[in-house]
Length: 389
Ligand SMILES: C[S@@+](CC[C@H](N)C(=O)[O-])C[C@H]1O[C@@H](n2cnc3c(N)ncnc32)[C@H](O)[C@@H]1O
Ligand code: SF4
Image 1: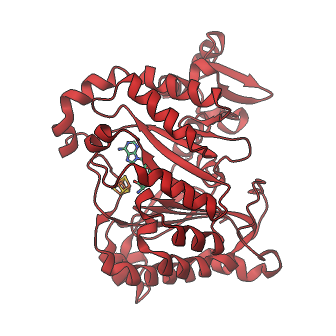
Image 2 (image 1 turned 45 degrees about the vertical axis):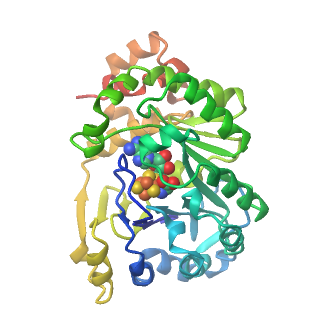
Image 3 (image 1 turned 90 degrees about the vertical axis):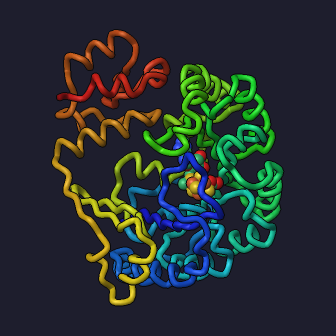
């Protein structure tokens, strides 16, 4: 296990569109939750792995962007996500980080996800000193009206302030999350969001089309506007891609763009289906064909931790070989560099593959299959055709 995800299920308030597991408030449970995380970490394979390889596990946080994920021993990436990890405050985050540091190999990528309103100069400096070398900031939109439609709390100015604080603390790898196809959003609104986002000069962008759960309150509230904006989805997506590529960002994954060398190594490992360990309520882990997930229940997680009753709060799943290949193919084709054809050959519909190759949606480059630029804009349709029934 070279990749570790830690889930922090607390938010200041719940955004109506969001389907990630988190609770508003409940921060009085922050300390007990971190205790539980440390207990789960202590019980996990990564600690045993670190103990076996003490020589390689010197220091985290050197900021190297070298992708050494094929090496063994020690964590190569740590991603503390949520929820809103920074809501825990520095003292609790530092408790976690000080336990993680000895488990990381040199040059490990350590990301913390942050809501801009929580990023003070003190927090930014503390994170940098604690070995964090990548921050992912949830901006979503700079437009006050659209932020209101999303239910985003906190002033828009917080985004710029957070970026200033992170730069002052020495961060050289900051990502901004943006969303598009927001209710009532126009193309001009999106263009303006991109201008404001680019002005902050982040190293990385994640740009997601808003997806809303069927039957949710948010969907009922915004049904008409969501239908209206859905028609613009492809145009919006093209605008995002063209604008960010023109600005020098590499479109390395369907929804992700980075300055060369600043791709998120943790997410790359996930898309390449590396094994990873997830700690915390609601977190997934994956090892070969085996998956397990901690229940989305913060109290049960905290209570299960004291007696170390991890099986009581987990559900397991075993993938079939065919499910695994389908997943590898779908995730691999999200990447600009595609996937080794040989690895997924059994999952491919050969006839459809030839049609897609002939029609300029797919490429075979030295044994790797990848989507052409045209194919990437219709990736879901291409994948649906390519996968053998
Ligand atoms: C788990 S959230 C954490 C970010 C942080 N809590 C915040 O909101 O600032 C990670 C990212 O997922 C994206 N996201 C969340 N819900 C989404 C949705 N329904 N559709 C598209 N993107 C979504 C947002 O861009 C968000 O920044
Ligand atoms: S703050 Fe982030 S994680 Fe929390 S509800 Fe909003 S989008 Fe989801």
